[in-house]
Image (cartoon, rainbow, N blue to C red; front, side, top):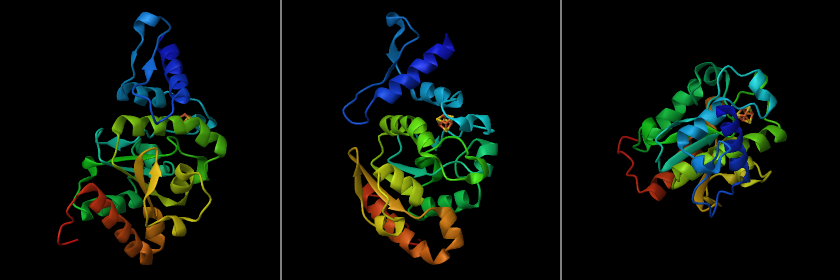
Length: 223
Ligand code: SF4
């Protein structure tokens, strides 16, 4: 019965549009058992998901972590090796750099929510396939719906192009806000890219200052 409920849940999520929907309901098959979906339901659904082939090679589903009422949400591409092993987002060197970026604008990692477009690692970190994005994006949309962030920061070309449905290079996208279903979205470079191209840290800092201003966060003097 639980499996059936989870399948219904995912079906429900797939049918929902982010805008204009107040609640997503799940059902175990009997109308009397219908109830509002919780964030934990969503997480459990993702944990058991086999909607695309990535379930076969994953070690862990990386649902994302952080404050459920975060005003700032970071969205990356997909879990890498470290993330797949630990089941947590952004835990490698790029993750450490992301933590420093968050702290530089006066927030803590636990103040924000960090997730990815895909919840399972593509083998050898290959680019996500369009079919995988289509299968997995309802989870991200539902996460955004639950969290209701003020600002989404799309990390890197892949997340930015996917969320904005464009092929414009990240170098042209970054630096300004876009509307994403009523939420302000700032594209910026991925921390892994910054590790290879430290000269671009200044550009990310400019983007993050705009994010901090939008959130009304005072940047510490030492930053
Ligand atoms: S990547 Fe997404 S859609 Fe594919 S199995 Fe994992 S959770 Fe399901």
